[in-house]
Image (cartoon, rainbow, N blue to C red):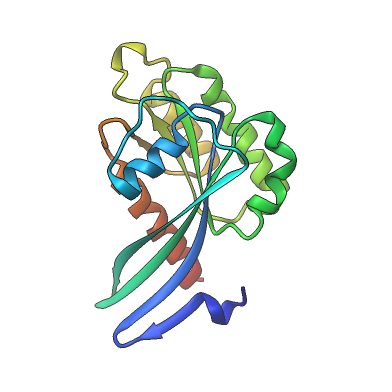
Length: 189
């Protein structure tokens, strides 16, 4: 897609199409976050994503009195190692990334660094990014504390949010924030 295709102007409204990749280890809740955001639903059973699942959602931002329509193309990328060879084409052209971990599983938190290194390897070091600690509804099982996550947030220059796909807590806020970060990164250069 050329830069001209990314921006379509209508009466008093500008439309942008942005690609956001949602990455992280298997079973951290990437698909559940997208399902909660797009349809306000949650499924208990775990069904791994095979390859990639793409969800399109619209967000309206206000910028200096103008309505900005953001078409978020959310790429839910499988976290299983057997799909790693497919990552390069899936990561290609990403405008932003959400790196998701499960607050009850320390290994998924440690692997956020690996996921970010993969982004860097594929030339995405300059894109807006966020770290998402999911499953905060499992309070008694928490392994990752806020200060640990904040430290990683500062290290990777990525805002940190905690969510519950099950209860819907902070889910809309996360997608609103990534849309804003991507929009402002493209328009404030």
